[in-house]
Length: 388
Image (tube, rainbow, N blue to C red):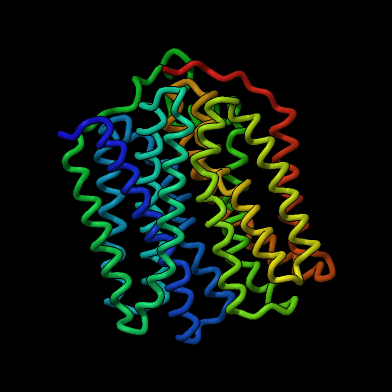
């Protein structure tokens, strides 16, 4: 069996492949459905399938992970993703593809919960932020590279799906060399939280404010990818320019993911969260003032990515600092749920905003959501636990 250090990099590799698959599916299926004559509204609803899968699976993953350990949950989740990717080319049906998207959401949630909890529960506190920053960095790298697979459509429509499935299979197979471990022994018998629902309720009471950055990141990611292109076209930018502007957010986050993780280890998650949220709000206000300038949008998107592109990984580490170890599986589940709720809420609210308030910049809405998260983070102070 592999060493602890090798195990860490295997888990990180799994996350990068997951990001790659998700980053590929969003634009790839959107393009295929658009070329097949599917309306933009149905296309957008279809894209929520992955997040619906995440939400459907969330209440049912914690108990099997406690019983069987991290490794079986990750293996089953990865297998669901690989099988679903392989099946896409065999039948182009709207409902069949939606079911596959939901299944990938379930598999990704199992994979992410297993890897997140494994890393957070085994990382010493003094390097936990750095380790989770690597987690966020490699997911972001995969998510950034994934859309490039759309270029393979000109060769063969099945090629992107099958190549992604093959890459996933290769990385997934390395898990067989990892020794299984289990979450920390459940102390819920002594705390009155012996059921999953009880643990969710207790986690929410203790650490609700740490879940907000994950919601904010989901809101940002889905809104910038799903609604900004529509808004950008309405204010006069062309499609080719918009296709270059959007990746600047993910690119900016790759630059600062590790430095912010290290800084959060040194100065505390809450302090760094307050700082990046404040700077992120400034970046989107800058975008509102310069939205007709292509250069202005390039700069503001890159700055926004550098500041708030790490909200998800900071959310995970903040949560792990303030929760007792036996609640971390429930906490990681709720982080995924918060991200998914943000991902579903963002495009819906964004679409309503540009439809009913067309005279006000779309970026003010995004800044407003970040302001609410900043206010909650600033005024809600939670003592951190001293995990080993």
